[in-house]
Amino acid sequence: DTAVSQTPKYLVTQMGNDKSIKCEQNLGHDTMYWYKQDSKKFLKIMFSYNNKELIINETVPNRFSPKSPDKAHLNLHINSLELGDSAVYFCASSPWRGQSNTGELFFGEGSRLTVL
Amino acid sequence: RKEVEQDPGPFNVPEGATVAFNCTYSNSASQSFFWYRQDCRKEPKLLMSVYSSGNEDGRFTAQLNRASQYISLLIRDSKLSDSATYLCVVNGRGYSTLTFGKGTMLLVSP
Image (tube, rainbow over all chains, first blue to last red; front, side, top):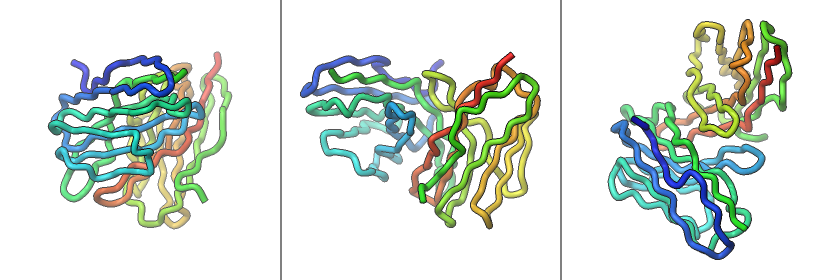
């Protein structure tokens, strides 16, 4: 069974379109994330949710909107796509122990977005 | 100073070599530290946590120096399958993000 699954794996679309990426985890973790890995391979946090509550929102254009219907799902919707949005988007989850994130991230396989 | 800095790569080594990766972090309040591994076109995966006293897992040894804000990873007897990018990751306290370094690519050749 896939622990963290995200769809689609590949997405090719035109500038200006709106697209969504879905993520689901079956690990029972409390915290989920979206990371962006650009062409230089730098992995950067975008959003984090803990039990459906947004806890981290890095400096990300408001064209990006995360939604967490329940703690097992975290979707990412992107409006008005731009060329610079081309990247691999990784969903991840982690357990939460006591007062902090344990640091053990479990990543999905990534969604490679190409904007033409 | 960048939050998490790693050696630029790639490191090209022959099988059997010992290779060391270094990492420095800027936030002295950082609480926990990790090494992740990312294969080409795959997702990152946790390789090992880094404990204050240093820790070893088979051929892999991780060290932490809080005073110098420095983390290292040593791989002994390199295998072809060790070829990957190694990411240094630092975590703060509570509702904080895991900050990833840019990674150092390792290429092990026969």
